[in-house]
Image (cartoon, rainbow, N blue to C red):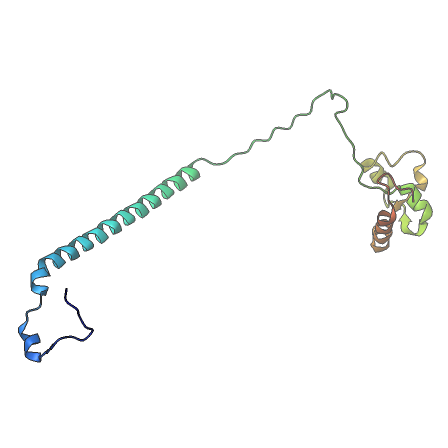
Length: 163
């Protein structure tokens, strides 16, 4: 076995020796040209496949859009009112938790009579029971709203609130 030292043995490089050597590129030129041709062909094929897929996507999108616009959307709603209702078919929920008569008794300055009692009674026949000459309803306004909120906030029960 030969021992090698880290120093090169008499290596003399001259400019003439370098210029006399022929580069090995001439021998590999057909291989590199073929590699470039294959690489370019592969990129072209991938690009053509991509462009084809995008074109087909837009074609299908356009066909779907035209098909969608061909048939109009129509909604038919049929409301039926049966002649007889089974009990309990109707549930009445009164979200107004404040008793109108108790509120108007306690706060008469916040209540008023309807301007047109006949029209009011046509719209709300359940309120117009008994003597309608003394019928009062809460005024719509800031103070009534504030009192209603106070009553609702400080009451703990969820039943009808006697004011």
